Length: 167
Image (cartoon, rainbow, N blue to C red; front, side, top):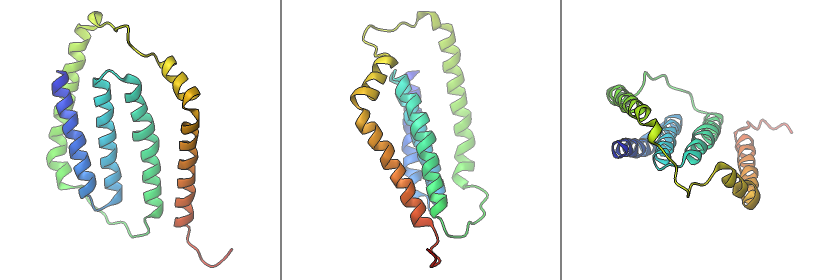
């Protein structure tokens, strides 16, 4: 079952990456990037890295993609065109969602029967150990990344501001 889930979400990640490159509208590209990030989170989950999967969802698919979408919408000065959705989403989207929900339901039902047999090995890193490394040993790169993102937001706002000659 892990191999089937891996193949499905690897294909989702690849399809999202290709769609990201082929889209003409930047918002659709950002949405495709969210699909890629969510698929990578599921792949992390399949590898047993639950913390990385949740961090992927919260940080990348959540916060960073909201930031990207905000900046794209802020910088987009062109007129929006009304669309009724892409043909690809209509033809592939619904069957893909049905297959995804069926596989997830089967996995959850199968895991529910075997829940008592799951055990952790001794080599598992706890979240406490991981947080000590992140917030003690790697605190400077963590904070520098935060400052860099803040500078990027301020730069995007400064570029998007309409200059009408007044200071």
